[in-house]
Amino acid sequence: MTSDKAVLTATNLTKRYGALLAVDRISFSVRSGEIVGLLGPNGAGKTTTINMILGILQPTEGSIEVLGKDMRRYRSEISRRMNFAAVYAHMPANLTVRQNLFVFGLLYGIPHLRKRISALMEEFDLTRFADIKAGLLSSGELSRLNLAKAIMNEPRLLLLDEPTASLDPSISQLLRDRIQAYAATTGAGILWTSHNMTEIEAVCHRVMFLSRGKILLSGDPCTLPAEHGKQDLEELFIAVAREPLQLQRGRR
Ligand code: ATP
Image (cartoon, rainbow, N blue to C red; front, top):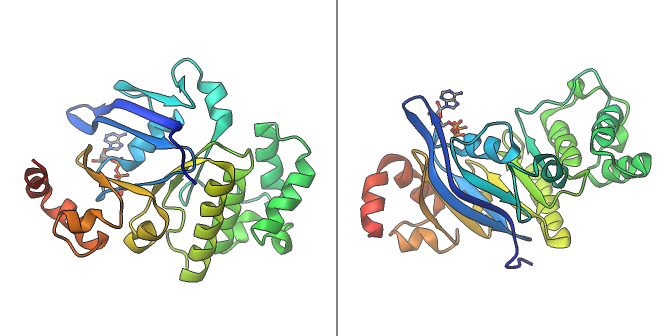
């Protein structure tokens, strides 16, 4: 269940690389328990936005608040309350599943760590891979490990950059179910990027379409396509990618 309490608020967030405005004064929030899809064509600015929220990139302008605290002043406190998973964020390949979780658990200062690791391995069906090196896991197993690591510190804000990319439909559904259950039971807010529109329709309470660094459209993924004369989210996505100016004019 979502609430009105914002776990993330971005205000006029901007990132400039020389002449390129990769993210152009975007403002948005993610509420407690809410799953928000951050969508847009390649190069729209999604990863740059996520990296600014994670504190990996410094915004050129604008502010980020997590749980009401400004990122610039409370970065280390905020870092403990959020987490992240992405296919490109590799786990150390020469450590086993259990060792990986142990190392991250130490970094996050998780109490009763061994117990927590056992519970996470059970939840993500990783127990039988506990002593296998991460570098030998299949992509589905690795994604489950990534997600187990991402919820290890019980984050109030979870950032997921294409968490189910390259997974088979059955594993994708399993991970989606886990993530939805996590948001519903803990009240965490989730920002989710994906190029899979069927998945986005199934999990997100709200979507924002980025185009050339700006938020072009936002709303309920089930009703937004019809509001713009499109049949479904996939058709709307293609319009955002190919005719952003037409959509923008239609909004006025
Ligand atoms: P994708 O869906 O392909 O992952 P994205 O929406 O995540 O794309 P970003 O990776 O945020 O897009 O990139 C936004 C724009 O900023 C792109 O034009 C990209 O080339 C540019 N960009 C990203 N990082 C840098 C950098 N370090 N220096 C210069 N330009 C960059």
